[in-house]
Image (cartoon, rainbow, N blue to C red; front, side, top):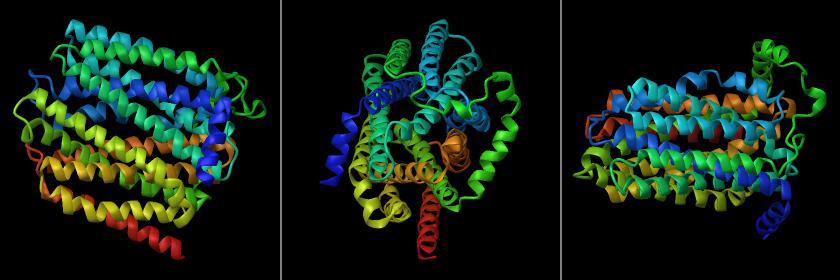
Length: 419
């Protein structure tokens, strides 16, 4: 009952609704754009995809700007976050239009990847800004936990819905990638318009903490990064939460590459059938994300944030070998649901721990570091999967490695709670 009451209170807050709407539209566009890229890179009939090719694509799209992520955090602690949401989404809309043009022109792959990389680069600012801004529209305590359950999970569900819509459009024919990217551009533009409902000062940071000159802010980037790392090092609680989230994200990334290869080569006879199976898997995993939003507030109250993360890791320890080793669609779909629940439950808990245990002046930098860890873990998982996966995606060794990592996280957090 308390959770329902807090949820009703949150949805009565106009500024929270505006921030949530901007998140939903932005992440729905992300889902559309990411599926368009996956379909173009992995499921195009003229391309022979391998785990190494998938890993390379992920590295090209994520790694360079993930390594530069802390610099975005320093700027987020100086720029008005509402303006970041507005201009960031406008820029992504324009860049998505450029990407669609390149698909039509059938240019060299490197030019296409460069355009997609630019969209991903701006995404680093927008997602970190959304997380850093949330405490500015919601009071602390249980309502912040509820907000962290609702907002990021709703965003993930919006991305899933956007991906599902992109899948549906993509199944209409093999040459509709351009229209899917144009749909993403339209959603980015709508998200930018939604940001206009909030005042420029609303989302912080506080004016007293802003440096007036952009040049001065850029020159202080390195110093600000060191200060953010020192701030995190002084707080073991968020550091441990981020470490656990990084390992669990690595596991999720490795399993994602495995499922991609299984859908492409083992579970379907044609590219269209493989894409449809991948779409079903994404929807089932999205249902797990939704269940995490329902369960996590109760679970955090019952077990604490770290206790719930340990439970999520324990679920992975048990279910990955029990279901994944069949290498069949049915058991894998069941695993996708439960691991979606566990991964999103871990993220909700980690978001809450970080937001409640770091100072507001450092939140942008810490969440930018969080974003770096999130993406580097995924790229690293893709690289490891490329080394371990055969062309058909069936690797017992990979599944057992993931199981061991889940078990290590669960054991470490249990020890931490006892201490």
